[in-house]
Length: 496
Ligand SMILES: Nc1ncnc2c1ncn2[C@@H]1O[C@H](COP(=O)(O)OP(=O)(O)OP(=O)(O)O)[C@@H](O)[C@H]1O
Ligand SMILES: [Mg+2]
Image (cartoon, rainbow, N blue to C red; front, top):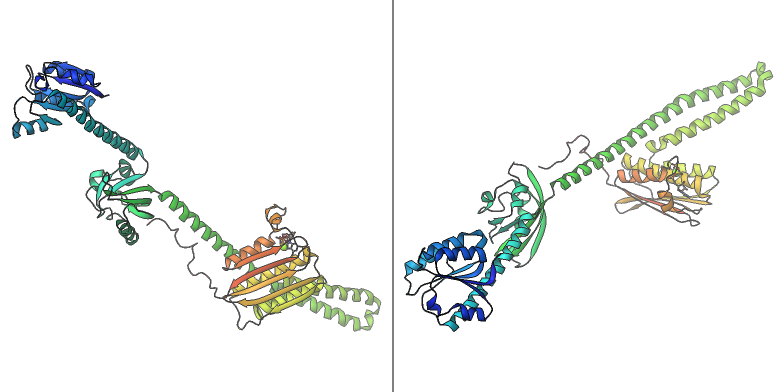
């Protein structure tokens, strides 16, 4: 390490005073002296002085050669060399000194007291230079070891510095970027926004702008970068716009993939519900038309048997059978309606839900208030089905769990939505506890309601508290149209 307070005098330095070392030692410098060039070079390497005062005229070697040796020795980086000459120095001699790295050329005889002042000033300059160098080394160490890419551009966006991590991140050697516009490799779709940000940066000295954009890698692929640019054009130490970037391609790809799979799942879910509804409609029709009709024929046959005189003997059994068949007809009818009331397809949502609510309330001995603004037109089949199923589940929950006296069902248009409300004055429940508890078998009612509502782009809100009844609100969009673009079939989105 260079010793800042050490001075080496090489050669005849008598023009700096009869004993030039003495006043320097007096103010605290350690001074070594060598009369010849070789000895001077040896001492320089051994003592590592901060300042060398070197007489150009030496008995053994040329002073310029010694200067060159000192300045090119990596162990002596930071050592100041001042050349001394008795006579005045020509321009050529000066430039020869500069060429071998001399920091100063002292040509006139100097008084001892001036020498002290002069050396002190020189040491201060040297100290400032050392600090600047250390700062630069620290900056380089930080910048070059950083995993972020760091780049500096001028006011026009031309690269003036790129860190080694930029090369690692984007594949270009620094020479391939230096002197080129930083915007040349920005993705065309992101370029307008990036240019806008750069323009804003230019207008705000010291200000910063951050953003995400795509940048072309040397291999031709696009990388997502996230970064922040700072305008340090007015800072004399930087004089540039400093950008700090990191590669977020993996994160962006993962987000895109998970978005795509969420869309696929939603699509599958809605397909499943659609298929289930079709199947239910089919089953309801089969049960109603086939089994129901057969039972009616059976009942008619039994009734006509009762009219026959020969049936008197078996009349009690036939009557019992008629009653049984009537019960069966009613049950079959109920099953078909539960599966999918033909009323929903034939007459629409309001009559179907009204019938269902009244029918269930009657069975459970509940007072029912059903209120619906008449809907002018039929809604999209998917909306009608979703709304009917949510209403159905909410009503059946009241019957099964609420121990209520009154059930209210409302269907009211509100702006762009149809608002369904199913309310009871029963026991209520702790919503959070129900949602947290993992029941076996799992409870699907509330979950199913949420799923149905979200699949048609609606919203649901359940309000309940123990002893305070329950309100189920659901809003369904009037302008629902089944999504035309099917993410199941389209290829997963990826980086361009
Ligand atoms: N109107 C209500 N009044 C009181 N408790 C209710 C009401 N609605 C729901 N709950 C409570 O919330 C729980 C969850 O309801 P959910 O409909 O999800 O399941 P479930 O009705 O028990 O079973 P299923 O899967 O057959 O619907 C119910 O078990 C019940 O404790
Ligand atoms: Mg339920």
